[in-house]
Image 1 (cartoon, helix red, strand yellow):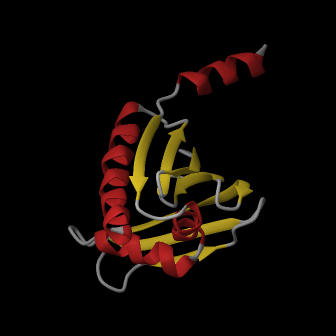
Image 2 (tube, rainbow, N blue to C red):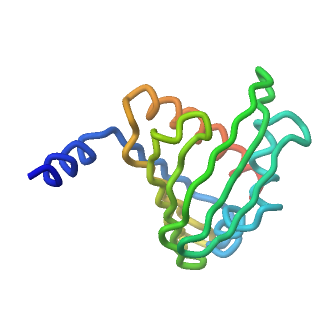
Length: 153
């Protein structure tokens, strides 16, 4: 019974879905997420110059870590997790936890679908600890995805 109750609580936790159409092939958009030098380019627009670092071991069971200092307030941020699903050019799934709050782990799933000469990127993040965390992540991701769109335009 305890497992059913725990599963029900996870299902009730807030989630978000963001969909973006990007002017690049699924291969290029996937590479923006899976090659450290590419990820650093679009993360860097929201960070203090030279502060973004990324270590990505993109394989099922592999780990990643991204660190940066915010442009606005010079706060240091570090996030990391474990890749659960890796389907080249089509799908990524990984855990997401800030170094400062590892107990508040969420789950990210990204699909990359061919769409009119570009890519429909469907980003979903689930299992937030609360609505405030969900809302903060939605604001942050939308800022990053605006930069990603410009990167491909």
